[in-house]
Length: 185
Ligand SMILES: [Zn+2]
Image (tube, rainbow, N blue to C red; front, side, top):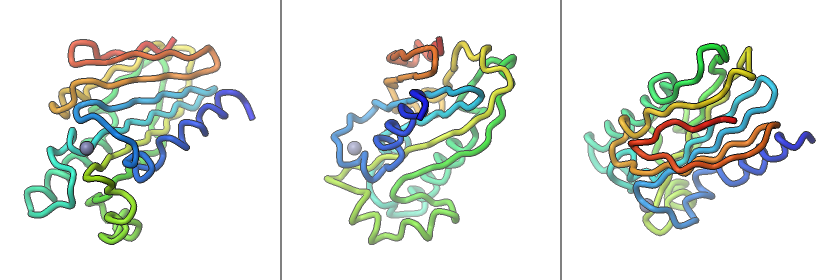
């Protein structure tokens, strides 16, 4: 396995399951972002406390809370409204996957019934949402930075701890509302 792919699968072990993540302590207002580039593939994973996206972390109890969850999901599926990549890189979104205990999207309903949510995803009163994006980029050499609009979209977020990995190396940065660009090289 190539090193970057190995790093990717390692990320996945940590990040692909909101259920697994919820068992770790998280800090409200602080999210994580992992970016991996391998040849023309670009994978972005955003993991946040649910509280920091919708203001609560329990099963939705009324129409307003269901609507808040649905709105957050819709926004997170709208990649171009949250992330910006260099136009020269020619990146095309290939897929979006969301994982969280109470997703409102119909496609998710069969995976997470209420019992499942309580049993696995909602641990010690905390819950997370993980959004994964897969892109293919025509000119990966032009991938020099990733810009974020996540702080505008989700004002409860105050910090995003970002890590990147590619064949060129690894890096980390703490992003804040005043510093929303992650260098990719
Ligand atoms: Zn929490």
